[in-house]
Image (tube, rainbow, N blue to C red):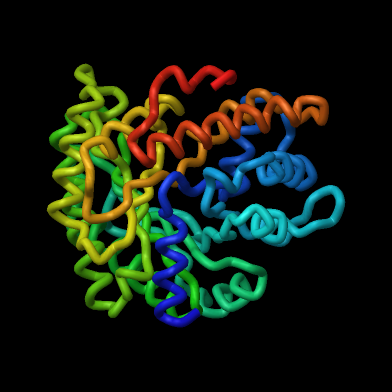
Length: 342
């Protein structure tokens, strides 16, 4: 891709009324999801599940891109059509998760650094041949005030790795999504989550600039600013929107075409409502969209439970969540839309 093509792809991924479906669960993650419905995580079950998701009628009306896992980008439907072709026929851009996961950061107890840079250039070239036009790399930033986390060392290590990844992506003609996720695990107040997110984003964009990454041809995937899951006091939607937007305005250059939020453990409707509140406060310097995994898939997985006769019901559940998040992307969501009849 040329510079103009990178920019056009990035803008297409955050086009009005559309967002990204994250279907890039690693084997351990999908195994946990399948265990919740009593299904063994075999290659065929994983293929059938993604087949159900990607062949949902009208999915492309609300989904601009799908993040795939290495196994998934090589798979096909039961009829033999490659998943990347199925998505492209719906006007959906195929993407790929390229990091090798978060590992313990040496000499930084309790903190992680994401690995996967070794050989990444060659892997990106292969993924481009397989049809991927964008990629994703996730960094994990924990918050633990009592133990002084996150440390500057952890934040810097992850920011540098993301910048190197992003530069390699653009060199290969692939739009990079950088994902510094400040976790909501813990009992911290929303103010602590704000400060940790602020620091992580500041460091990320400093490193991206130093790595000569074209911001116009990239996207940011990040968390909303939230209270810790175990916090006694939970911030309401308006407070979440106010603090998230304040954090983003202080750190994210307007050259970035869009920000796609991760759901990060939020309930599906909750993630939709909070996105809607933020978009109602627009206009913003960048598009505010979504890149949800569980918040899009959970109702469909529960309806499917691995049975062919449930595919249609599961696809209706996915279509509903995609449609409602599409509305939230434009600030026009209402609770009444949760009715299937809507």
